[in-house]
Image 1 (tube, rainbow, N blue to C red):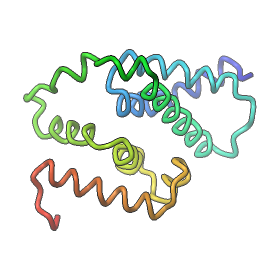
Image 2: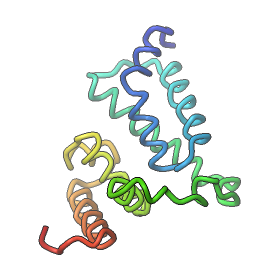
Image 3: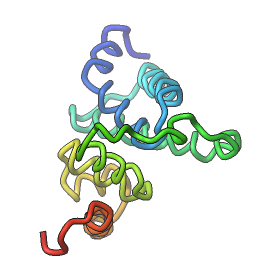
Image 4: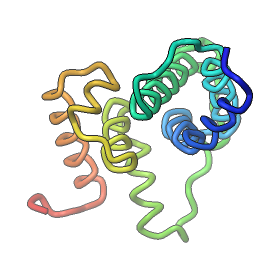
Length: 159
């Protein structure tokens, strides 16, 4: 079991990443808080050492994504609709809100690779390792996600 100090340091380092991943998948604050606590409880109880900070960060990303998927697969979740899904983002958010809506409307497999690539700065081979996918599949998913976003946002085909 890890010490309170180690856990607090991990929350400081990876808390934002865990929260953003949860919001990306779950799209509501209540579930995000639940998964946040679950992920850091697993970290507290996890006894194995990490090879590096990058290995530790990848562990957090993988555990967070798996926990989010578990919530999304639950029977209770399939029978409810969150208030956030009902509300639309305000039009006053401008282009940033439009891009966010477009990214959030992507299928999960595209949303994940877009987030990890553009927001966390991972390369396709690194994303493949984190998500357990073939590197070429990651490249394909990124290409298809960009094309879907371009279509949704009314961008030109060549740029």
